[in-house]
Image (cartoon, rainbow, N blue to C red):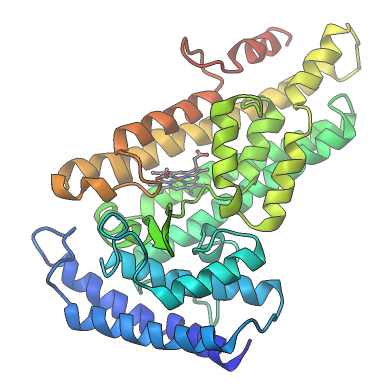
Length: 389
Ligand code: HEM
């Protein structure tokens, strides 16, 4: 890390967090907790001036090419600064046509293009690639709820990744291999871990603290002239690898593949490559259906079918929990209590909440293989399998 990059990193891990925390304390004590206008202006100016100074020095340094890790880390630090400016409404994408953070935008665009990701901070910066020092990972504030949110997002992402790796191995071995049953059990166990981790998140996260003091850092912001949607815990390939390999979602479904295209550059480059590879593979569901239709028999056939269905059910259960519990309790319900004038900036991706909720509901139903008259789900195929055991 160059001296300038190190100086920014130290600032982000120290003073930056202190300033954001002080601002959060002010917002929290207001009657309208979502208001950021006309309060804490001195603190906001310090954040802006100090961050800009460090970034201007880095921009002047030019491309020092210290490798992918260093570039990725720097992108995260510049992104944290830009996201905090957005949170405190020092920038506001609907108010501007260009980000007023000119130096930060230039640096983020240069580094983003060079590492192969969007020029903003992404979920990996806060979760799977957030390197802790002395037991403390990077964050926006000292708030306990932010730490809990990131810790349990990381656990759930890693568990999804474990499940996706096991399914990928099945895809190489073939569904009728006796070893596939072991791997399908691994995948189911990992998805049960997602569920258990989300239950803990649900128990430990304070609704209002999350809604008013954590979530606002994940909003859309501009880099240069373009707006980039906020980060969400779903910006990794594993969950889509599971959707596709289980045959619950299909790459030839424009709704679903549009979602993949949109999230591609929000993921780490190796996740991007993984997702592309899986889009070229056949699903385990379709492989199993074909084996059964050829009236092939294999000794452990019922066990193979049961094991695949166990994974499908575990995936559906976690998807239902995400939507019916987490989204409902931590977004939908508190948004009803929030003043109407703030509703425009409610979601990370930008669409109005009812539109976003309908899209998330559709994903939940695809993952649960639910019967729907308006969406083609894997309901019939899954029921066919259930009938074979
Ligand atoms: C308090 C906890 C959580 C809340 C309130 C929440 C809420 C949301 C919301 C509102 C979205 C849509 C984002 C947008 O476009 O604006 C979303 C997306 C997503 N979240 Fe969460 N989330 C939570 C935790 C998690 C966890 C722990 C995971 C597991 C890795 C997760 C996985 C996903 C995925 C994969 C997506 C993308 C859409 C999809 O493929 O389903 N979320 N979440």
